[in-house]
Each structure stands twice: as C-alpha cells, then as structure tokens.
Image (cartoon, rainbow, N blue to C red; front, side, top):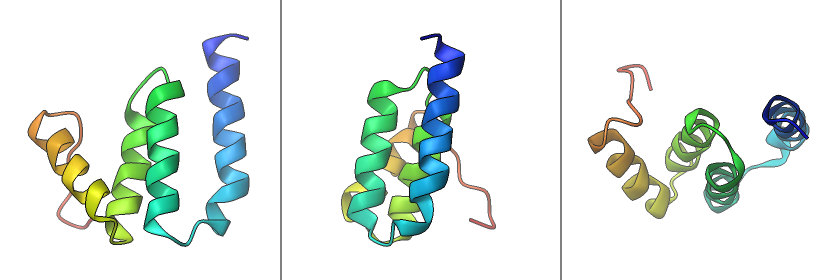
Length: 78
C-alpha cells in the first residue's frame, strides 16, 4: 500500500466515523492514532484541535505544545 492510498483510506474512514465522535477523549485517541500512522501531522493536528475544543484537558496541553513547537497554530476564529 502506498502512502497516498493509506492516507486516502484513513480520510475515508474518518469521514465515516466523524459524526459519531461526541467525546473529547475519543477525538484525542483518533489524533494519537493519526499521529502514529500518518505521514504528516496535519490530519492529527485537526483532531488534536477538535479534542481540545471538546474539552479534553490532555489534548489542550498537547495542542499547546504543538503550537509552541510551531507544528500547529490557532487562527483567531478557532
């Protein structure tokens, strides 16, 4: 499996499960898995931000680290 096909499969899977994620801890776990499996941080950062916005304290802390490291940023509207 190529990186492109793996990424396409991950995005398809996430599109299916996204509406069912209602808890910050679930979103954090997706972020952790994406970070482990993904070839770039972009998809993981999206889910770290989502988990933080859902109130997950660990995700908030880690997102702040990613922002400090220049890996993630927050737009004023976020």
